[in-house]
Length: 457
Image 1 (spheres, one colour):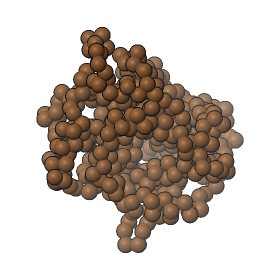
Image 2: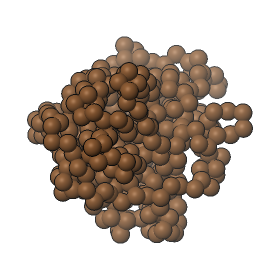
Image 3: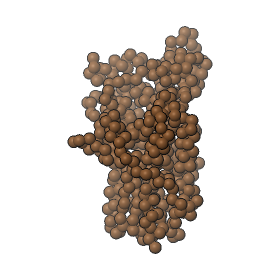
């Protein structure tokens, strides 16, 4: 009787899962394993919203395995140690897992390989599980990664993607493998009240619903703040409840400008993963150092707190930050505006904002979160590092009637039309009645400070 172990990490699904497919095909019995590793918490990756969403994902994965005659085995402790225990208990000859890109994932893989070698067990790491195109598969001449998105996209779009596999029909798990109780979502404290449901079942339902109503118009509407027409698939991609390979195939099969725009966004995700894989230090260090002295928490404590609470006096920024607090998620255009305001208008170190987002976002992904923050801050891959997004102009453009602001900033719900983006200009506005602050900084002052810091004056 042959046994293989499948170590799930950021790939909590049954459909299009190459490690699981390989294990089922090559062994009589399979141990689907997830390890609650305290190293995740120590590394700063743990947060209430993601912990609750993870609980949903694990419960759904266990239910899907049960439908196929199996179950999920849950252990707690250092990943390499717990995997080795399962290998010893079952006599498994191979452990299958998906390749990661972060420094943490790399260290985990090295440790796991080293300790499995000592037990005579083989580790097989599978590519194109967490991303559509593996990091390092597409590189320019003379470099180990693309530093600019557009040429990367041209090459990426020409890659032949592997086939997207269906879920296995049956998974047979050894009887003698013990498991911890799955952590229920309701045990997690501090969860955003509007947090979405996690798991592959919810993910596939969300994709099919959005595909019918939103994919065709995605190119025209994905920046529309009140329309809320984005796919909202990022949390499911972060936890691997959906396969990026399958999404690319299904979008291309659908065709049209909306599908092309959606595939381009999936490519952005791969782009950031290939940058992080090549330069793991960019999770904390500037990708392109500029030598400026950012304002710190000590320099701008009150302004940073106002930004976190959605009390900056700039309605579209505040709406975005309040959506984050309520849903554990934020519209992509809102992310750009909130990040630009902190990093360029307030000139606060991007790492402070990135850390806050990681504490709140259910899709808080090291590759996408850190590198999007660097893109906005002008230290990353943006070819126009000195661009500054004006929240008033952007608000009027992407929320022209103010519906998004009124949804998330109820103090301003009585203000009509685009005037909601500049409440300080309204004559006779009763500040006590509206309980809404004056702008914490004039945009002209913030822009002057930014230009001076960047030597643009």
